[in-house]
Amino acid sequence: MHAINLDPDNARAHAGLATAHTYQYFWDGLWETLEKGVKSAERAVQLDRNEPEALSALSLTLTKSGRSEEGVRFAEQAAKLLPGSVIGIALLGVALVHMGRHDEARQHLLCAIQLDPHIGDWTHEFLGQTYYFSHRFEEAVSVFERIIEPPSWVCGYHAASCAMSGDDSAARELVNAYVRLVHDESNGQDGPEEQ
Image 1 (tube, rainbow, N blue to C red):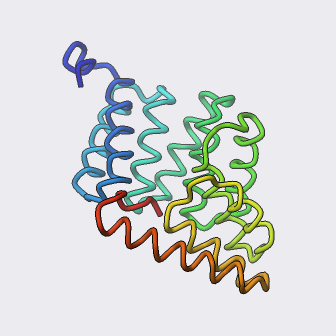
Image 2 (spheres, rainbow, N blue to C red):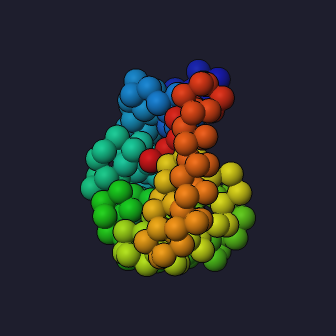
């Protein structure tokens, strides 16, 4: 916020604020928080339509707001402006997952992971979804197993992938882990997880 106070026309500062609001939404689950992110991202793009960070922030906020078609459009614009951006490539993959375009999403997520193997578990969370929704359950299990501290929603996908691939014992263990995580989250030990 300090950067915006110093320069109210700084598109990157508005993009950073939008991203911060979006990440806060992942924890507090409040729609108002995400709406603040959308407004900040829209302002960033209004200030500079050629700023990849602004376009990526708008893509993420729109995607998480259920406007994934628009999110894909802005992510594609960001990727064209800055084709080597690992985060930009991954965010395009995330937007495509939300649109149900899993084969395309997988290509972008795999590319991002190849460019930066330490990008973060969130890319694996969405990559696993692409395999799950493509009925490639063993590959989904393999991806989900790489995630160090999976959020509850990932445990659910992981358990379902195990069950669909015939590993009922692992599926039961993961369902129990899922129940514990949901219980912990509902008791305030963690915030709601991104879906």
